[in-house]
Image (cartoon, rainbow, N blue to C red):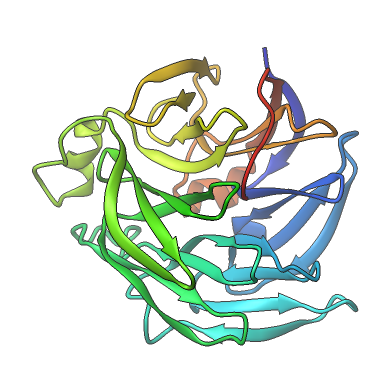
Length: 294
């Protein structure tokens, strides 16, 4: 069912289809890469602070979330990087996924706690960076905000809360967000803040997401080796097992928007991923094309 597009990578995340290629971050080689449908790879940027979320501005400029130092970088036309926004005073944890909307605003998530250090999970904020680089808190109380999708009319931002068993939705009002609503619930919120104990309580751990033209969301289920197509309300419309390999992000793209790209890896643990380079991007064809953003 799946075809391997590219392999031998450390940990692939945050895929974005743009101008005929798939852009993505390879965490532990500190690189942003672009790959053609034929598998040709180009190094787009080197980010010492570890690249995470990616997003394209209306003029085609690429914004990159630098995870460890909590900076947003902008790639200039000559390939150089400049600081676009400093989020170190606003984001309590490492930066995570990012979505750039048609007005050039960047919506950015963060871990909220020291996941790799074994700290207890705690709620965190979703940040918004206006097109002039000014950053602010857009929403509070989210449980590991991760992948995001914006509906085609720009009215609704859907956010995957990886550690809360749910997709949440916010009404977008200019550059502000309304109250959080549950777009899809997969079960009760975990009863503990110990991440090791939380994981078995997650029926779905939504990581990266993308939206299709029928209003369904494709979800990479981080702690189960599968991709799910979810309707608003939580009905599972389709399930695609990823051959026992965990999947952390997904993106619809290709010439007709019907190629589903998925970032898979045996482990997200930094030492294992950095040492063994067993991550891949796999693809399959689906019937309903991409819609909205990313």
